[in-house]
Image (tube, helix red, strand yellow):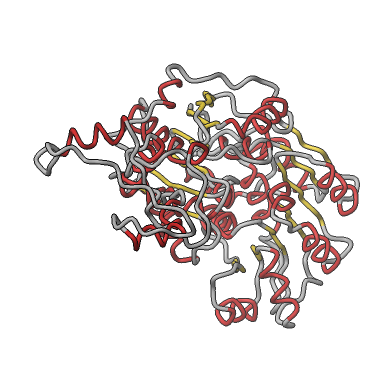
Length: 480
């Protein structure tokens, strides 16, 4: 079936033909006729299947008639992140060529004044994140009583980000008679409740089983130890050894980890950008544009990049952190193997991630195989290891001053004992009927000309450092 059989207008068909698309995807083929028939639609499809065009194209056809009024948008599209909202606006700009439609974007990080002036001129399509939309309504600068069509996109991501209460508030502000389009990749119980509450006899369009992964993705897992530096070493090895790696998104669970890993990869000579929710909007947009244009081949990101971003040529996905929620795994690896392509997804798994991996495998209905030669990830590459990591490893063997492991250390002296011993030095001064131990005798032949032998002896037989202050004997945790 071609787009011409779906009931779209001539202007929309011409715009679609200009982009080179000739055949609709399954979600587009099934959803567009129901949207044009003014029915509520519940669309369930895995990421990368063309859900955005499934509502953008019929909306453009429906909006050719009518005119927007000041501060009263005709249609409303809710997106969970700024990047997704901006991407939807790009779709309207691309497919709405030749149509005089006013499209406004309400997202955080942008001046309220600029957004308010656009609303004053009248908006046919309003694309917004829930928080900024409610800010405008509470200020009295936006009325939702004229909304004819409401689109809730990436609903399961809305749930993960805690936007469901905001969605419920917004649904009560729009007319009861509006048409509602609801798109999601998974159907947790809370999302099912929302659909039963705010959709009226919807047409269910399901083109794949919820929480299934794209068939073109080759999935692997690599086991490592508990130490953070082991994960970083493994990631660097995987990046260097990867075949056909054109670009890659590296996912972390926390914003702080994104910043740390970004800095670490830059330190080791990788061209990499970062993307997380605490960055200002201009920096987020710049990083995403650089990655799309190929100026930087690697992007370290939080789950803000896991949903809906249209970057069709991502060859590899790396889960530096295994996601806490199994659904997030499906969305993360969905950034690759889009539009019929193939891709590779590799998860770096620590012993603490066992339960998460089991939950993921249960959700997707398949076992994630271990990568060949993955045992090499446990071997430390000392030449590639940062200095602080080598120091920490050396301290465990006594190479840092020959200190004994914590469990083998002698009991600490009474208060003031260590300090008193330091002051007494070799004078044999008594403190509380206790004579501080004499320092270990040094062979006369050891000098500055033999540093290697000194190091070997220090490793083989730890020295007695009870004369040092107690605070110097505390274990040191190296920062990365």
